[in-house]
Image 1 (tube, rainbow, N blue to C red):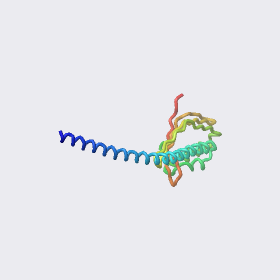
Image 2: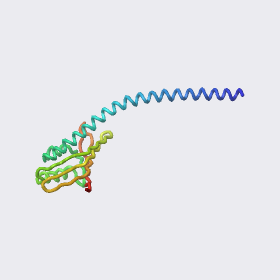
Image 3: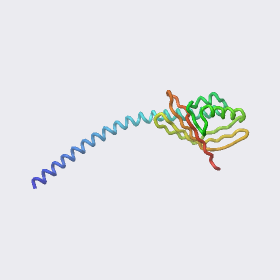
Image 4: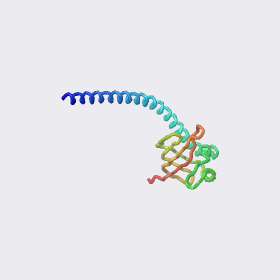
Length: 160
């Protein structure tokens, strides 16, 4: 009986010790997580707002048909639909020459950031003198030297 009692006492002491250690570690982790979480949240909200502003400025440059300003948002490493940076620039320069006053509306903008990479997805409403479409656009960006640049984009039509 005494052996059982000592065993139970030792087990209870061990359980109490382990519980105390886990509680201390858990409280320490929560304090660290809260500090990191707040700093992380502020940093990422700022980055998301920066990317959102970039998308807005990018759309303005398209509406203005300012090819130099428009291409300034793109990385030299840009690739989309089989086109590299130069091919994309040529394609857009031709479009800007003939499109007249385009209307470009961005709605339902979502931004996701993971480290130095961001993805912006939105509904793009486009209209010019000869053409109109609505589609879902996803623009992928990378942060280079503190600035976000577009590295790829994809557009899919939305059937009405």
